[in-house]
Amino acid sequence: MLYLTQFSLVPLCRPNDLESGSSFDAEKAEEFYRALFSDLSVDQEENEELVAFFRDENTPGADDLVTARATAFRVGCDFLTDDKESNIKLLKCINIIVHALETSCLKPKPYTLKMEVPQAISVEAIGMDSSVEKAVQHLWDLDANRLSPNDDYVLNVQSGKKPYQKHDGANDPLFTSVDSSVFRRPTYKTFYALLDNYVAQTGTEENVTDAERQEVWDFLSAIMQTAPMQFCHKYCCANNPDVPSDTKGFLKLLHKIWFDMYRRSGTTDSSGFEHVFVGEVKDDKVSGFHNWIAFYLEEKKGDIDYRGYIKPRGYNEAETNSDDHILTLQFAWKGVEKMVGTSFIGVSPEFEMALYTTCFLVGQENNKVTLNTGNDEFDLNIKVYTMSHDKIGTSYSEALSHND
Image (cartoon, rainbow, N blue to C red):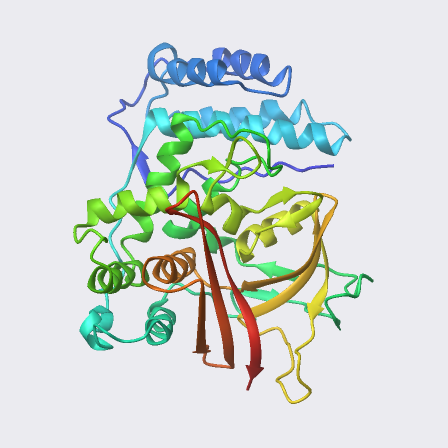
């Protein structure tokens, strides 16, 4: 059975200009919620009605926000069954209600960095004409939001195998735990909000709602306040005359190359972000899916079967262990396999966005770099392919060697 957990209201938001002691009717809200839950789906029209309900018909006061939110979870528990698929649909309905409540009654709290962007963020710190390899290492060094292995998260890598071996080399999940407070960090939180916006199967047209469009801009705005993305902007601008020098122009460029939809299987069914970070299913195989956060969340839901890591190619290479920030994995997702897939582990969303954006805008299809992660040194080939002329088709890192 799926258990629903109530979290506190989003700490990154604050109430709109709401009055205390309003005439919010909790019973009316409960009745409305039950009607939405009755068929375990909320379509676009119902979502618009939900927003109008909170904004115009039954607006919660500042003192009623927690009640309005908690009621959705309480009523939702009445619809729980022993059927996992139905419970997942129910949870999605609850998320839609909570999102509509927050959209209608909350406004983003201005986000300011907890620390000043390091002086070394300047392109001049590594040289304007420095190689992509130096830029990649600099991005790594700037990632202050990266998690610490065996502290913020714990891995259980288990058995290694060769890429062609299909046996399951891991009885347990890859992730033993991840500190839940991580998902309250601005860039992690806004990244998390994007993961349920896509249909995995290629050939199925994506329907992008206004709320989902806003989530994209929220994410882009959050990552642009971090050192890796600010350096990415400056470095790309210095090495590619087509990259806008102003932040607004660069945000539009990021949106185009990562989030503008294109055809992958005959219809407008894909985007660079979906393919790289969320994953797709094409021709009965997992396509893309190179992000550790998405992997962890799908594994937590029971939708991923981790089958072990791919052994290093040479006998003299370092052993794979729980503190490695780069792993080559084999797994099954949604009933289909990915025999080989390399992912960064524990890095921030802004680091990966900055890394792949840099290689796309100023690099080549193959970008061979040596990356020192502090514990280990990896020779990587960062691959970037174009789709629909000017958008990211895929981007991922291929581990060539691993040394202590």
